[in-house]
Amino acid sequence: MAKKVNYKKRIADGLLERRLQGKGAILIEGPKWCGKTTTAKQFANSLLDLGDSVTFAEAQTALQVNPTVLLAGNTPRLIDEWQTIPALWDMVRSEVDKRQAFGQFILTGSSVPPQQEEIHHSGTGRIGRISMRPMSLWESGESNGTVSLSDLFDNKSLEPQNNPLHIEQIAYLVCRGGWPLSTMMKGEIALDEARDYYEAIYKNDIHRIDNVRRSSERTRLLLRSYARNQGCAVSFSRLSEDIKENDNQSITYETVSDYVDALKKLFVIEDMPAWNPNLRSKVAIQTSDTRYFIDPSIATSALSIGPKDLMNDLKTFGLFFESLAVRDLRVYADALSGNVFHFRNAAGLECDAVLHRRDGTYGLIEIKLGGPDLVEKGASTLCDLAKKINPEKMPSPSFMMVLTAVGDYSYRRPKDGVWVVPIGCLKP
Image (cartoon, rainbow, N blue to C red; front, top):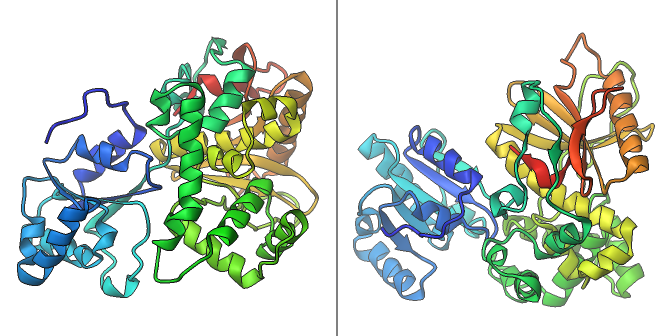
């Protein structure tokens, strides 16, 4: 297969290459337009493109007459949009068992298959999984990558590093999002891509996820409410009330729950789970998920907000920047064998993001637009949380960081060791 010449390298490249060496098949999951197929094509040597209507029709016929032909081809064989023919899952699993070889198939999908009953085996041990999200700023080339999270985990010393991005650029990047095609465009043309993606969600995609007919208008209203409440641990009941208060429409709790579930299957919504550390005190820890989209541009598009609107309302800008930062941290966490959580206890102490790795090490991160007062507030919060962690039951944080939108350079504060890092300097 021909490889794309102007391909921008992704963090998922390394993950896919490694996983293919230890699994018979790899499933790449994520929202449409995030680059799953393009990444998979860099490693595949044959292709079954079920996103093509002609190929899909032929594949359905082959499934009845000679299904083995669908899996025949040079390996790794890429099966794109596999979930449109759910029976392929069990076929791939069985073929992996027969061949007893690694790196046989790559499956890509932009939604969870609607007919789960057609899948009889989990694929455990045969089919590995990789999540892909829209591009981080380091992948798209906006971050210079002079501060490595891996180095911070290893407690390496770093000299102050210059930040290449100013606040107007950050406002634009929040609204543009990390959709690979839009990163190759400029100005309003790139912003159009983000708006087109958002409109496709409620006009088209919500109808293709399963056999349930959902309302485009209700989907649009829910997306707007989610955008207003991103970064907050709001209940479905509160989302229902928010829609009524702000849009003068009534949507029941059950409808909100159903639509949110559908949007998660489309990889549009990715809520953040709570972190549960061992603390010295017995103050209750809140366990509700916080609400986030897979990319901040969905939220800005849902509320018809552009870069100038963010610049004119710094409080709102701060909330949307947090969504951008969470997206990037999640992408980087994948490269570090980690996950991103949030923390909040009943006393009101909270931490925007905890990057916790499988080996038990973790970093505490506060996300702020920037400026001395906000940086000081974020650093104080981190130090307060670190003091409450019980060192007899879990290690101290590997690092503490205030992740900012602006700032001339990255540095480590002498008085408390907290790193202050502009997002334009960060990489995994």
